Every structure is written in C-alpha cells, then in structure tokens.
Image 1 (cartoon, helix red, strand yellow):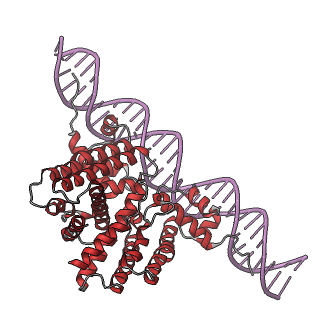
Image 2 (cartoon, rainbow over the protein chains, first blue to last red; image 1 turned 135 degrees about the horizontal axis):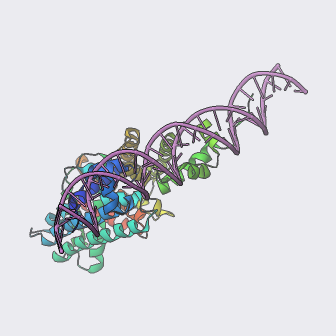
Length: 188
Length: 188
DNA sequence: GCCATTAGGAACCAAATGGTACAAAACAAA
DNA sequence: TTTGTTTTGTACCATTTGGTTCCTAATGGC
C-alpha cells in the first residue's frame, strides 16, 4: 500500500543505545545520533518524535536487552553457589568505559526528567530482585530482612563497580569479594 | 590603585560547585551559573576564562573541601574500630540527590575531557588511600594485598552508595554492612 | 500503468547557547 | 581633583542546536 521503511528499527535502536550509553545524552548531537542509527534526518523524524523520545526508547531497549539478560542469567544459573551465580555481575566486560547505562541516565537526566528517573528506578528494582532471587534460592542469610540487606549491598557494589569501570580503571575480577559478603551473611 | 572586585572568590566558587554538583555541566547554562555564583557576565569573563574552566575549578574545590575533609576525618578518627571510622563514608547526608561529584564528573565529562578524567581519578585515589590508612591503622586484613582489596571493595561500595542516593532512594545507614566486610577481611 | 501513501533527503529555520565589546562606574594613588 | 586602572553591567554577536518543510522517490494495491 505504501513504501516500506528501508531501515531496521531494532538495528537503529541498538545504534542509539550504544552511542547514548557511550557518550551520554547532550554530548551526542543529532548528526552523531543519526550516524549511529544509520538513518537520515527525514527518516528519523518520520519514525520518532524527537531526540529525547529516542533516548527513552534506548533506555527501554537497555531494559529489554541488558537488564533482562542479566536477570535471566541470574535466574537460570545452575552453578552450585550463590557466589558463582552472582559473579556474572562483576565479570570483566569488553567495553567497561561505557559504564552502567542506568547510572549514566540517573546522573545526566534523572534530576531533570521524571520519566528517565522512573525507568532507571524500575530497572534498579529489577536487578535487585534478580540478586535477591539468587540469595533466596541458595538460602543465603537466614531471615528475609538480612537477605534484602545483602541484596542491597551487592547491588550497591555492582553500581560502584560500573562507576569505577567508566572512570577507566582496568576491570578486575571481584568475585572474591562476593565470597566475603555472602560468607558473612551466612555467619551473622 | 584600581577598583577592587566586589564579589568573594570562594563564595562564587562554592556556588558554582553547588550547582554543577546538583545539575551537571550542560544542564547548567550560563544564566544559571551566574545566578549561582552571584555575579554578572562581565565579572564572570573578567575573572574566569570560560565555563569549562570554572567547572574544573569547582572540581578542584570539591577536592579541597569535600575530599580533603573526608580524608582528614578518616585519618584523624579516634574511634575504637575501623567500622566506626569508615562509617563516615556512609552517613546519611542532607542532600543525597546531588550524588558524588566525582562520579557525576566521570559520567558526564570524563569520556570527552582528559583533565576532568585525570582529576577524578586523582580524587578517587585519595579516597582509596584514606580508606586504606584506616585499615592499616586497625590492622584489618593480615597482609597488604588483602588490605588493598578490602579498601577497593569499600571504595566501590561508597560509589555505589552515592549513585543510589542520586537516584533518589532514601538514604539508609549502611554501617552494618561495613561490619560484615571488615569482619570477613579479618577472618579470611 | 495509475495512484494513494509513505520513506528519504536536503535546504531551511527559530531559538538558545557560550562568548565578546564597550561604555560607565568605582576605586586608589598622586 | 585628576588620572590610570580595573570591575561591572548591558548590549550584542556568531555558532550550534534540535526541529520543520517540502519535494522527490519508491512501493503495493487496484
């Protein structure tokens, strides 16, 4: 009935996520964004409302791809210990300088944009629940309150780990620290 | 011999630090910055080179004021345990939504500005050494390698704590977690 | 092959940005 | 009081920004 679009929506959003993740919102101007998405101005504004809405779409895509994959890995882990399952959160990454997109979004747009702040908060909760699920599965910490505290602790550590990574420190293996925390949670 | 400046340099820099810390670099336009610093365009460009140089001056001021105070508190702490001394890093703050200026700087300008990245790195090292000093003083962890790893762990936790705070979660008391980590470091 | 409909592309635009120029004012020394 | 110097404030400017317009091209149903 009409001319079909030539670009692939998922590919374009992946490109947007990558460059926003890497450079942030304002540091990515429209030409940069268009290049990363592989489309031109006309197609861009035909398919999306504006730059901010694409950023929010990238945030959603991060949720669908990265956060979901992480949570699924945590849930489906068949390793023998909580430490082994949770270590996926701290494994060295190819491009650690990108940091954590959730943290980046909170820092840059969170204070000024309620939608961004809310989505970041939701993703944070998803991660926390994923961690908590592992602790529950392995019965780390006897009582519920202690478990949630431990989950929070690991979540904080995760964010800190990502923040340091964005700062440029070479990624290290932090799984040993997990052992400490989990061991202590069981002892207490 | 000439007309003296009417504004106080330290007060102006404090204002710049506050608004940059709170809003970030790009979200703070020149009128905002001038308002926060309490001076007008002419005075601004007479006293400073440009907006970026003021941001970097604010970074230095953060180092001089906040980081130095934290390090000094850690060094001068006469409490009876490492946990008590280190808990200052996690005490609830009046305005947690500002987050950690080091992390904010790394996220927003670090990837594009080498000076900012270097200064942030230097402050990170200062904090780490401050933590390490406490561990050394209380002989937490038998060997040096273990101590530095523990210091890194606490530093990561600190950054994560600040990141969560900027996200808007109500600040909680995390000193208990310190106990776990430190206890485990001694046990291992 | 026609035609309605939509994508693609380039020229264009208004607004906001950081930064500059310059004149007036305030001060200190002589 | 005069003079030289520096601050202050306002008007102005060039550039970059995200966003719009509008024309052309391509497609699929009839």
